[in-house]
Image 1 (cartoon, helix red, strand yellow):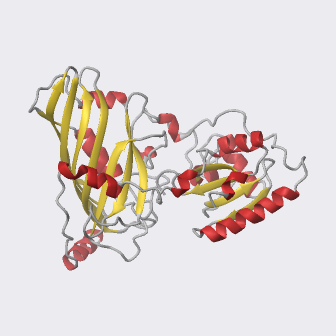
Image 2 (image 1 turned 45 degrees about the vertical axis):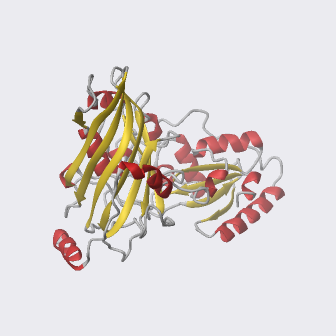
Image 3 (image 1 turned 120 degrees about the vertical axis):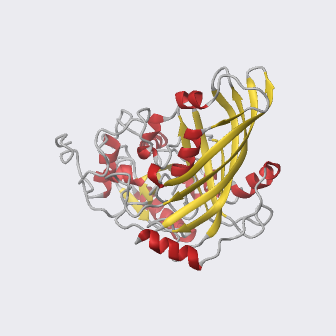
Length: 78
Length: 330
């Protein structure tokens, strides 16, 4: 059933035309695919990468802990 | 929000481990956020939390709106400022020891850790303004795996296959997660995975390589990767196929990859439960970029690598409790 559904999807939708991929365009692809400065605004915050490290820092600095949690590490794949 | 963050100690972490794990830091998080009890319900605790180091929850929101998050931070800071010195003191329950298990423990020292970006492709890529939909992950290879993939000797013009590399790319990295976490592919779902390296220059032990390859995966009707925290409640058809090219510099004597860059572009189709595709079933183009990772964050699918060099937790996080896993109460 799953493969039938997928075959049906493929039959109804045209494959998109893809740009040519060659080693000469690696620089352009790098700039296009990697996140830009705006994409990485969240990285301007100095995040500890674990809850425990954050707790220890909050205790040491006498500050409240701001903890950002997601399914997938927020600094990785979410 | 960046300016507000200076008033806080800031940390980011993966929610599933904290809300279901059995290490001391996980249990602390669960007790602080669930009225002193372990979390056994399936509801997510993702979002932004503000804690006093003593454990009081000063604020919480699960929102993508910067304005709403900032309002929560302001309210939390107001509550913090009203706390007495005693109430601001750190909890005695903060673990002194590192957790017994984090997936980062498997970081491949001396091997290869890659940072991988995925992004929906727009018309005119790579010269047009990029799509705002992108995601990040990492991909690991142990030192012994890299050594085994590389020949000990090669001259200009020689070519060799990087089979493990191609397989791990196809199954675990070149997946449709540009809009949200997705599922990996099982070995039997790989229709094609090839990565060929050709030596274009030699100097001493160093060799410069040009890389070319392709991947193609189609999801099977049944979930093939066992009972674990990735097991989906519902299966949807999905597939992806890519073409790859890139470059690498290797040390053939040492059996190491000194530098590498890979680009993959291809077509994705279908969806998984949480990958944000909804009714956008495609087919549509997608691109990936891989290069050495600047950090030690574990790959999303570390638990599914099936290798003994990535340590596994004592108590799987998809079990309700250590008791259920036969390890007694903790």
